[in-house]
Length: 68
Image (tube, rainbow, N blue to C red; front, side, top):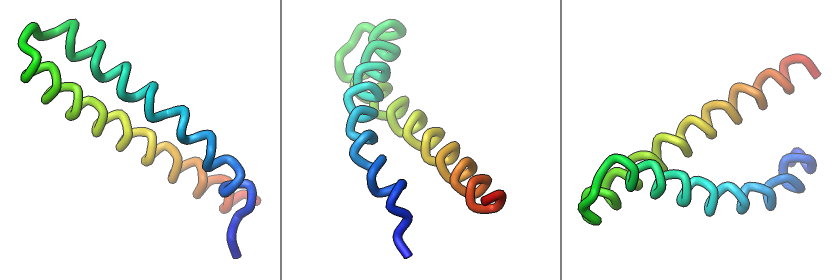
């Protein structure tokens, strides 16, 4: 069965996209000057942040289902 709370909160994840993009670009731009290096590092940072967020999500989701 579909977890309706998870589906309802799925729309909130759209707020994470501009946040991850902006943080990645600012972080890369503070360390490099060339635009090609900035974009490459920003993509790597965005993937790292997204991966960390997904891991945290699955850990918390597993804990919620194990307890409840």
